[in-house]
Length: 484
Image (cartoon, rainbow, N blue to C red; front, side):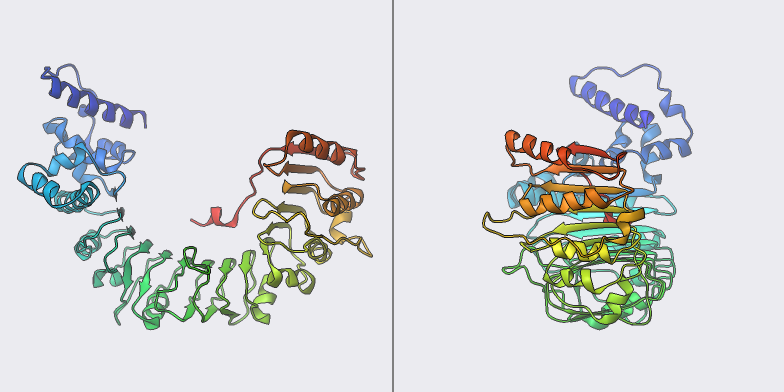
């Protein structure tokens, strides 16, 4: 990485000297390195800087063409890099026809065209392209076809222009080297009848448009070793019934929330999952769609947030989890008393709406006999002053308190009377508690914060060896961070 920095610095210095008309001399040890080593070093630089090294000297003119990873983003490709390929009459013409942002986009398109034409690496390990806001439209099919011809392994395309969705090259759907695929934005998934993606292990489909439901089915059913699927829905994606039938699938992220919709609602329809190997699921759905699980699936990890009521098979699948992230709503709160989480070891409970939630929390603890780690996140909701929480001490102590609960953390604690009663009960009955960490609501005044800290410190803890820690900010582990 230090050598890559030296190359970048060398480029900047040389450019500055050229501008001042100074002669460039001195020993150049970096240029004496073998081609393979120089290519490896260039992997640590942004593509715009990699391409710009062609002007360092004759020795560097073609080195960049062998770098097997290319990334183009409308925020990154600018300035002097464009001047390598674009200038003179063409550049002046763009300036007259389009505003600055539009001109930058068209410069980026031409930059991608030219650099892909000159690129010579026999195998393109990675190609990432991000096209920003624009009124225009460019033929991305030729870029995708070029990547497929170069036996691309990882391909990413993000389009945010205002024109219609772009079609992809048909050759993409029969690329036998593709391992990871990331598609986002104005992209049309028009999947042909002939599909074969034998090496594809990971797909991200983020707010894309499907020609029809059959296109979705053809795509997923012809990925025999697919392990990871990440789907972000939106209300114009042309799919009512979203069917995921992938026997090899191990991790699923399904997000059906229209953040920019008037009522923050998705489309009406259904989600059907038929993936016997599925072990980890992130399921967030505010649309009211039905959700069902086909065949017997037992999850290890799950993150759940929805407004609908999944079927019994889905609930039974959740009961086997060892790690659960649960966003409490009226729908999910009902699970706390209905499901026996016999294998649950770590649980994060997040409050997203005003809810009389302490009783549900106790129900969850009663049904989680071997729970070791409990996180509560209250930072996303502020209760009204007159909102009343109810608390009734359970008739019997949850089994996890006796021999298992070791870590208890509460983020966004505000010290309401009933919350204090709940914490006092947990302190008094958790025999194995090793660490308690509490972060206060960020808007709390210093005086109120100090008062809450003293109240918590004065509470009796049956586990005398437990630590009570206070923090201004807590970071909980997230299931999504493990998706790669």
